[in-house]
Length: 162
Image 1 (cartoon, helix red, strand yellow):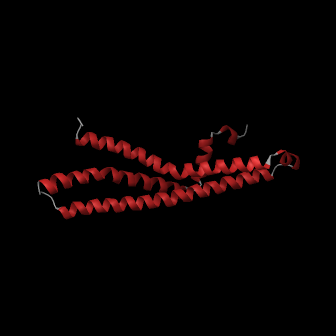
Image 2 (cartoon, rainbow, N blue to C red):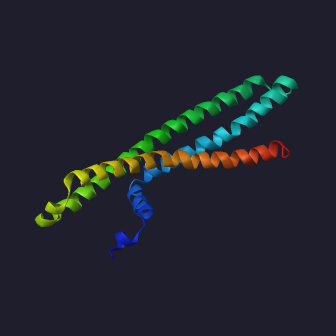
Image 3 (cartoon, helix red, strand yellow):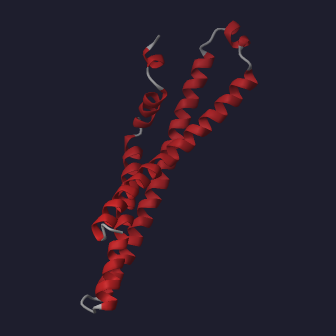
C-alpha cells in the first residue's frame, strides 16, 4: 500500500483543502466569529428590555446601535464564510478532478479499455459534488456547534433554573 492508500479519506481531503489555507482560515474563522456574535445578541436584547425599556437606566441609542452593529457583523461574517467556503469547495473539487484525470490518463491502453467510462464519469461526478457540498457546509456546521455551546453557557448564566 502506498502512503495515500493508508490515509483515510478525511486526511486526504484535509490535505487537499489545506492547499488553500487562506480560504480555510477565512471560511472557518468568519463562521466562528459570526456565530459568536449571534450568541451574544440575546444578552444585548436582555439589556434593552431590562435596563432601557423597564428601568430607563441605559441609553436606547447605544444599545440599539449595538444590536444593529451585531446584525451587520453577522451579515459580513456570513458573506465571507459563503464566499471563501465556496471558493474552497470549488478549488478542491478542481484539484480532485485534475488528479483523477491524471491517474486515468497514466493507465496503459489495456487498463483504460477495461474501465467502464460511463460508470467512472457518473461516480466521479456524484462523489465530487458530495465533496463540494461537504466543504461548503462544513464551516457553517462547525459554527453552529459553537453557537449551540455558547448558547448553553449564556442560558445557564442568565438563569440556571430555566
